[in-house]
Length: 113
Image (tube, rainbow, N blue to C red; front, side, top):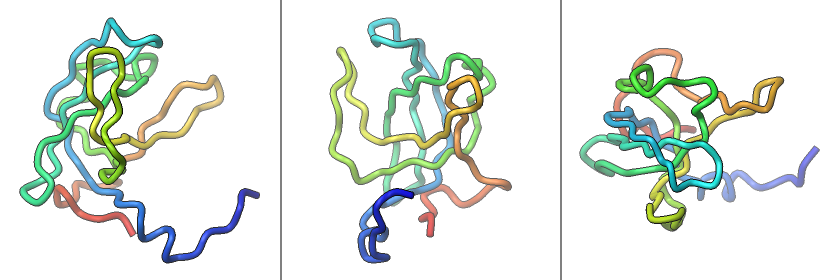
């Protein structure tokens, strides 16, 4: 088990629901990845992220999909791209990233508790 954190520490991580509205190839990334454009609703707006999800997801299948992302990390430069949010996922048995998402459509920008 990993180190325990307080609930106060957990509250500092701002995880929100977003909807992927655009997907581009990212040939300059070291590992195969997509550039995602994600709508988090009016409060947070449109943000971009790089995601290494090319093994399990086709670009056209990602459009309109809701995802969970951390929106309060500082931007991270990846090659010539600035990733503004961290899209969350877990590894499957082969080590491929499986996206975390909502079971049903949720309000964009809704906070994860």
